[in-house]
Amino acid sequence: MEKKRGFEVISTYQSKGINLPVRATNHAAGYDFEAAEDIIVPSIWKVLLNNITREMKPKATDLIFLEENKKYLKSTLVPTGVKAYMGEEEYLQLANRSSNPIKHQLILPNGVGIIDADYYNNENNEGHIYFQFIHYGLTDHVVKKGDRIGQGIFMPFLKADTDTVTGKIRSGGFGSSGR
Image 1 (cartoon, rainbow, N blue to C red):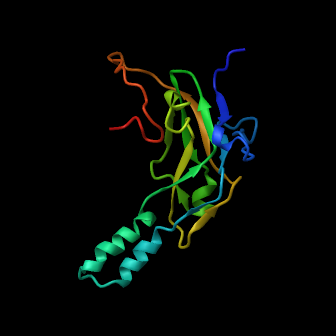
Image 2: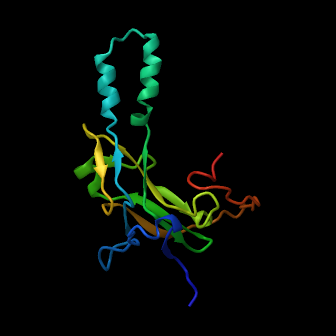
Image 3: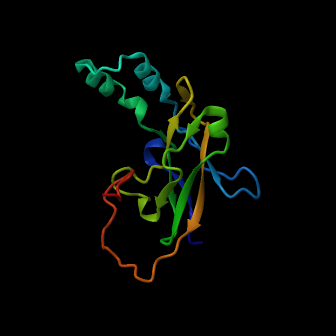
């Protein structure tokens, strides 16, 4: 039987007890992804609250302060240890779990993630799927290995009548198809 779409554990996580995504119920559209390891998602409020307590007049040390706090202003990539294969005219849509914002104050800064068919087995990271989060809670949030962090839904897509083939081949991993 020919494989159409599904999930595999990437090679570097083979011995780490990774569970492949599954649907939670018979009628669920999304496959639940779990975190492959413990990750701290920092609170964005740390920087904002620190800035409120500072004087409004810029100082030379403010640039150092901004550099030290960049980690709180960017999203955190949470590894799944999983890659996905699918047909050429399909993609895997990554969505947040509906409980993440209300229970854990975790949001996906890009709204949804898109995993293209040619991301699978790319030379840079083997197609490792990550979920990116921003945490708007007051304290850092620890995502534990095995926590359900998001869901993936296989979707077809359509091409425009004027679509042209660029001839480009994906050259890397996460975010590698962009300019």
